[in-house]
Length: 126
Length: 109
Image (cartoon, rainbow over all chains, first blue to last red; front, top):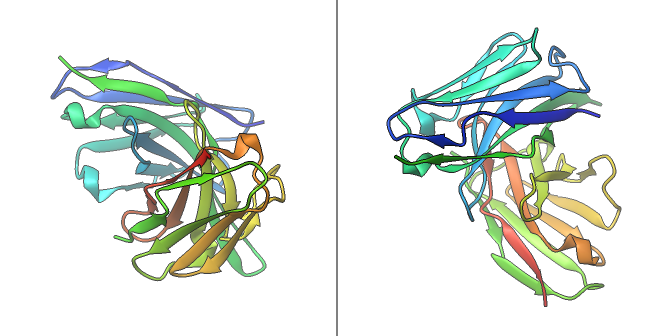
């Protein structure tokens, strides 16, 4: 069974950089069938996709985060990481890592987040 | 950006009843790239439906999805106590790659 686990500081000061790591176990992080995504959820609100990384290192980011976001991959450690710079109180949220499964069958392609970490709360406050 | 609008915001029903949740996209969305998730308090979302109508592994058959761009529906045929939660639809597109609806809260009447 694939498991994802987020780790990192729970408190970050305004204007600093939020850094989180997601550790993957029970499955390959190298498989070409998967991207690895970060998603966040402010308290009492909906889900917002931040960005993703492929095994090749190719990244896609939500334009809402402009140049503040960076996602990296360390296949030897089976981890991928998120860095979000210049944080403000609006970045306070539960941050999830998720496996982004992409596959094609019978001429149709599908994508979905099939495995998620349990989430980690990051609070931005001085 | 494709905006997903879910309705109703809150749905109050009793166990055993049928629930119908709607997700409408601001532009046409490929059904292949429309998914539904269930989230309970304090938990991560769980994948229920992908490809608009395909049940994920281990999901009971009382959950079903239907529709085509821009209108999609999640139906729970007979509500069980554990089904009361928040439900999100999600689509895969161009930029941003993924967007989620704002959620429908299914509460016990």
